[in-house]
Image 1 (cartoon, rainbow, N blue to C red):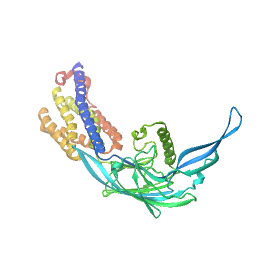
Image 2 (image 1 turned 30 degrees about the horizontal axis):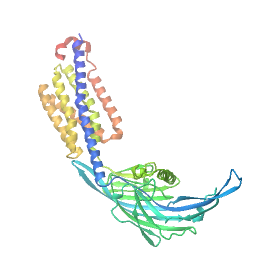
Image 3 (image 1 turned 90 degrees about the horizontal axis):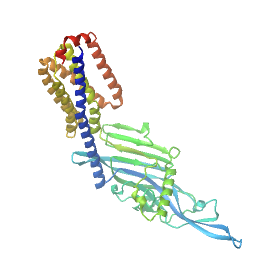
Image 4 (image 1 turned 135 degrees about the vertical axis):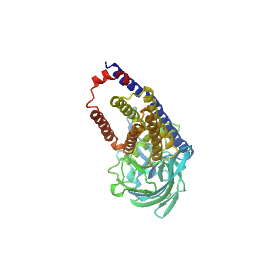
Length: 470
């Protein structure tokens, strides 16, 4: 009795699963295009510059500590006095540090893929509270004394020094010092440093500093809040920033509109562990450097990631591949809804639709997603979505007007598909509300099916029209 009806439902389910195969292939194509885009970023990074992270400035004071160490001779039982010494470094962090940066963006291409690059004009200023050299003696050592063994220097860690577009000079009170290559650090191997000749550490004092940094990078710019009080202000004509890291900009100092953005960070050492992390990383890096002749710290990367940072990323407003990937995830649901609509039409109108016709319509809906990703590589995502959806709706509407033997029925289904594609576009544009919108859609569809079929006698239907349904 009901075998023909159940067989048709089973066959439609198999066709829906079959359509999942090309959908999966299309999704694999999208992932492949994503990898090509990532390779484009890596290619530009290899050829020019990478993401940038700025650490510092930090004042490094190299010194030697000498002390006496007593020991008892095992044979004579006499107390022996030995002179010991150790080379050390003392880090002085800025007390106040202000960074004012203006960032301009540009686009570089690898094939069809574009990558955002930027140039940052940064003015970094502030002050250091200089210690007295004698205060660096260790409290647990006998007759300890310290002396400068090398010239103190200001160091700055940079992820990629290829991005430097100027020759920075450090204004140190009324003196000017030129920066040189290399950070002279163990953990933060890439960067620049400036020797502070004639630095006197006989009395506590405060020194003001200032430098201008013209720095290129790609996609993301990060800072380490190394000072006691950090104030960073960034502005750009790029209207689509994305903030990240341990700290977000102040809500009152954050502005974004079509002409660009500006953001302000105010971070104190009370809320950041950057200074302690810097000390730990340098201690670990120094130990590795002392125990190994190889430059293993150079190979580890320019700037360690285990330190507090905040950043801004210059992102495209629409990532076509992530949008297309999200769209494909709804593909099977849309095919299933369309097949369900066809089956209800068969039941209610008693007009049989052949499984091949189900299959062709399902494949047309799958091709929509391939059209979407291919067109969006050439034109804007919105225009690509509109073009792909119109093409598929017109094709399916024209085809169904003949299959269903009535142009009104065909274009009625076309209108329903228009609503369906409109809902899908809304789901893609509202990522944070996608779940609730999708749930409401499924509930609405189920409600419509239950209302439309509320008077259908499925037992009688299976007896009366087995041939037509099959």
